[in-house]
Length: 147
Image (cartoon, rainbow, N blue to C red; front, side):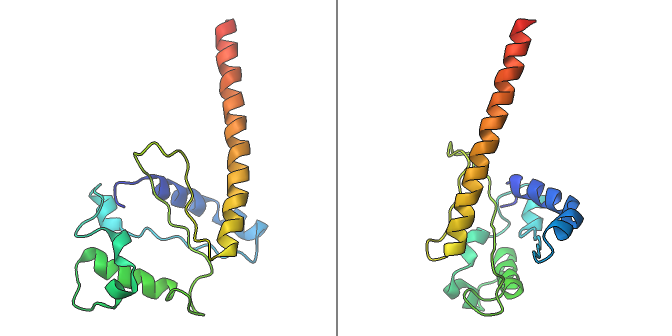
């Protein structure tokens, strides 16, 4: 969505680390895509319709449905390959931001064992990183209180 900035920030960081990632993981091919640049430019959720709702087989196949997001969805689907097709990308991560008090959340399809394993790994790394950050904050607070 155009008014969600976390994904844009992550894309910028990935682009900065692209050479390092290629060197460290030569078999990994990472492609980035800002899916709704017009909505992002306008700082709005969407231009015509919610892009997330455009990726059903019915909507993608409806040639009479047009507008910025329906057209974008069709272009993105063509770029990534049809779901379940041999030419489709192996893995796609769709990043979002929310104002709901959900904390960090991952939603994965249970039919994809790779997604479940990746989510478990990320969750483990996340927990360790959050604990380390929390410890740093406690140390900073303790040091400030001691002064």
